[in-house]
Length: 260
Image (cartoon, rainbow, N blue to C red; front, side, top):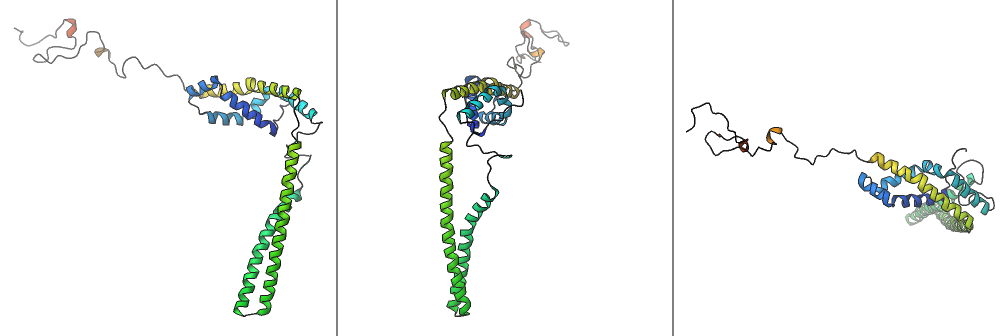
């Protein structure tokens, strides 16, 4: 078998839902609590590894994509425009026209305001009446141009939005039972053989190493003070005659005169 199929843009929402279902499973939730990894971070890792996880269910995805393409009459999956290469692509001039449609009304309105302000300013100052009349005329012309281009841009944007809405509505055909069954089979294989093993591996690697059991005794323990005969020093007699091993019945030897 060749390279794994690239997941289509319209199938990424299904992948995201399958990923959320696996993360919400009791097994993954328990491992999340033990490892301390946030669920959001695990979801980001699952989204970043889409090429790795989908390759485990590549056969089911190929079958699902073939049935869906056949149901659509052999056309390319609608709603997904190719990013590069041959095919139905956007014309280079369309972007320039869109930019001009937005900038022309703005520039015309700015020019109209500038010319009108200068023209009427000269009229009020009663200076250069000929130039003032010209500036006022150009200003009103620019204002009319701004209004017309703004109206044309609004109509063009409305038609474009209506066309895209109609194309999007027509591009979602009614799925046949065979296509739905193939989709469910792909999602099941994706969850069981792709997403779940990947998440388990990530949680296993993120689990903290087991710490030694430090529940027996305190942090400092000396054999001399941990014996069964140790009961603590005796401060009752002179010279602290009692030792820590008073419970054993033995007393420390005294080098001075014998006790009476």
